[in-house]
Image (cartoon, rainbow, N blue to C red; front, side):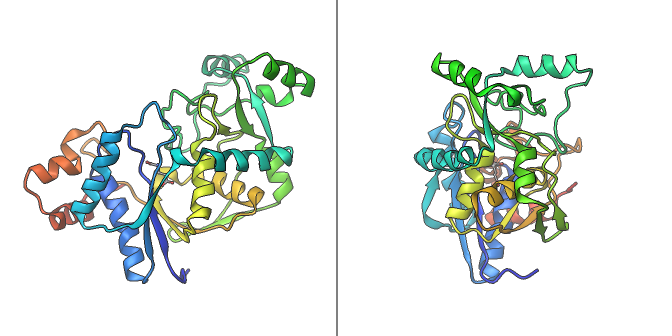
Amino acid sequence: MPVPVPVTRFAPSPTGLLHLGHAWSAWQAWRRAQDGGGRFLLRIEDIDTGRCRPEFEAAIYEDLAWLGLDWERPVLRQSEHFGRYRAALAAIREQGLAYPCFCTRADIRREIEAAGGAPHGAPHGPPHGARGNPQEPGGGLRYPGTCRGLAPTDRQARIDGGAAHAWRLDAAAAAARCGPLIWRDEIAGEVPVDPAVFGDVVLARKDVPTSYHLAVTVDDALQGVTLVVRGEDLFAATHVHRLLQAILGLPAPLYRHHPLLLDAGGKRFAKRDRAMTIRSLREKGLSPADAVALAAGWRTG
Ligand code: GLU
């Protein structure tokens, strides 16, 4: 599956220091752009204004520069583009494919339990941005659709009354509108979209006028990304992204969801694992080439 001119990107959230797993992901994206005579872009995914910190953003630039992964300027910072995400949400709402959701996380949990189900997340855990994200109602829980059936007058009355609400995708209606979809992954091949994987995902949070899913879909298209290189933990999220691309009339890039580096316990690195941050490796005296070689030879899963 050749990509004509690979435009790749690295899209970290500045909520902690980058670790070896990030370096590996960024390096692979950078390398693909280099090898194919393409472009490597950097996007700062800082919509979660409560958790993102300027010092972590500064550390991202510092770490990538140290690794020698030169990115094209200007960097896109998502917090500067909320208007664009609002417009995308409006386009989805105009098609009747989004609805306001007034539920709290506790409401969602109660509803699922009352229906006799154990609250369960989506495959591979929730996508990043919603990964254990306290701001997203339901966190990694699949939304049972409680607010989908509210009468329009009831919705409006609650909104007019100032009730806090998120906006959710009506995934089944969106899928019915678009018909069968696929995306292409360099490793997994042709993947049929399963709109039920995450169900009615949040498009705009109560506190932020977008969500990870909406912002990433809009920006990959806006930046002209043709090859999305990212970790396997985001594989399932691509079902959502492909569906959003179809609704919004955006092009579908090629994907490469690469295996994740695992720690000694078989778990993927987390930002809290301080020993494997790029900064700590640098302070231990590793060279950038050592760090890349370390990542390339690391255990994956
Ligand atoms: N911001 C996400 C993260 O830090 C990555 C999003 C993506 O690559 O699509 O994991």
